[in-house]
Image 1: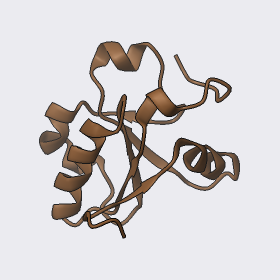
Image 2 (image 1 turned 45 degrees about the vertical axis):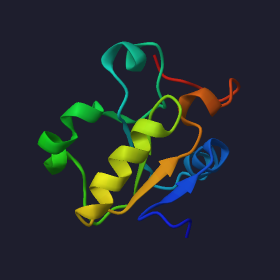
Image 3 (image 1 turned 30 degrees about the horizontal axis):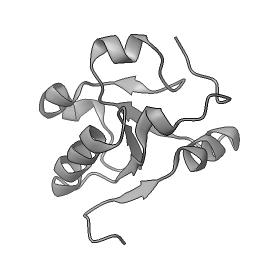
Image 4 (image 1 turned 90 degrees about the vertical axis):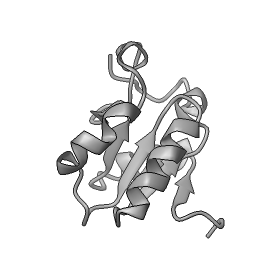
Length: 106
């Protein structure tokens, strides 16, 4: 563990989980314009400012990967969600580190 209440995954690790057809729950906490410019296929869009009102959309028993542009907002979301008992992972580097050769849904 890294001293935080949650762990982190690299974008390629997230992609590998998706490729292996593992059931991957992903929440993208970026703003609507960022989401519209491209997102991970299958991700659920819940902007960071709306997380507290959307807890019922997150399965507390399922591991959830949280994504933003660089990893900062998703880290804040992970801190909050893990404090409530959610199983969350932060995608370090965010969408900025998501490789250009990985398909992005638009």
